[in-house]
Length: 248
Ligand code: FPP
Image 1: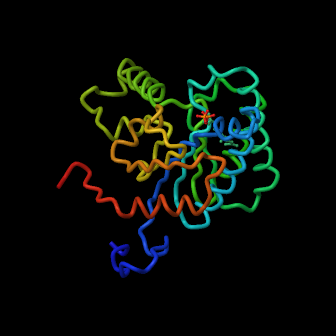
Image 2 (image 1 turned 60 degrees about the horizontal axis):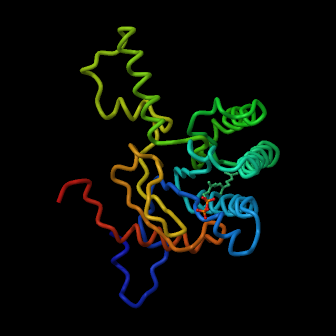
Image 3 (image 1 turned 30 degrees about the vertical axis):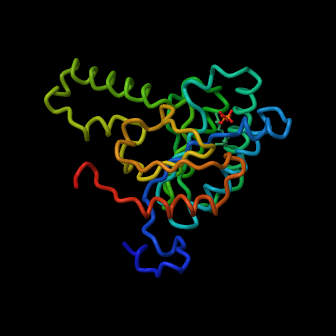
């Protein structure tokens, strides 16, 4: 790989390496970032939303084709009401801003998850953003909202069971590709790299099926403090990995 053409003492930069096609990010550590500063958790999410804007733009600029961020899990509804409300406001602000200011952007916006739980206002902003951006040719930015890997698989299995019951699907034709085609990420490649800031070593129900062969990079920085330099470090770490996909 190009990475190893550089001499030992030369600094490796992202222009020397093969970039992943699809990056997933678990945007973790907002609460701890706020606590360290004596601020409410919602302040951590506000700072995290700014980091999200910066990193999404950076990924698009360096040529990443697919970015999936974990913004709200199916389990996050269990958080205190004021924290959930603050997150919904941040989603609304971003989606309004995207409709208003990103007219000439190349980024395609998509949402992964069960959207029936959102307010009608948020739901129409999600739909509007998808429609507005669907013919663009840049990075696909998937925002996972009310997303859970298990819930996604349950929904896929229910859909396939209905297709079997209606006679349009033969159970013997169910294979891995067909399952992938029933997920929210249908038509997109599996993530190559999943970055988890804040030091936790968990998948937290993120892209369970799709991450079968993803490389995980766990980083000690809290999400609001995450910078493009941290992303570069994760990309360089990823490029050093020897991906074997179960082979030798
Ligand atoms: C996990 O950190 C983070 C979340 C549950 C929310 C992530 C959401 C954002 C970064 C805002 C994104 C905004 C847009 C517009 C997509 P945590 O709160 O669990 O942190 P902790 O583990 O330190 O408590």
